[in-house]
Length: 258
Image (cartoon, rainbow, N blue to C red):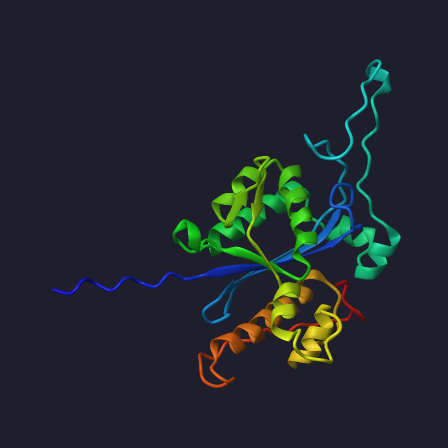
């Protein structure tokens, strides 16, 4: 009697993008986060998570940043210091402090909600098939993802849902795929390619961009870049294969950061 066929595992990826108050993940605030959960066999979007993050204060995290000065007495205690919200960064993303105060969610709650999103969209699979993270210049976003979960005291919960590894110092890092590297692999043979900015790769790949300016739109564009390049890899001579879906992205921003 033939053994029953094993059901194929579903592979999911999370495309991630942050808008921030600056470039330093140790001192700059997260202002907006967007995450799309995507099935990689069909590129069907199975979930969307978008939040503005309310203004918050800097927090001392062990092993991160400068050592705190020793206080002479209780009256020397420092006042809480606001995270960095640089004018240039806010202007770039068209996010205002008023928007964050009115529409933003407390950072601890954002981390809790994001964990629930991961739980709801992560398939029950083996350790080496857990979801991983995709992004444009994703090392930048990884730093702010770590800040988000460290500030909420939930960093140890993240490996339950995201594939990753511990480094030499025992610090956990998520498995990431950078679309810049993917674009370089796929497009570096073309003479007209001189940059791997998101908007230029979209233009080269025939991905239509409407103009918008938030993390959610960036995530849509990033996922579409991966979808097109994946389609090329799966097809023989550009023909055949399973048709994969494309997500319409809306852009009002004139350019992308990376």
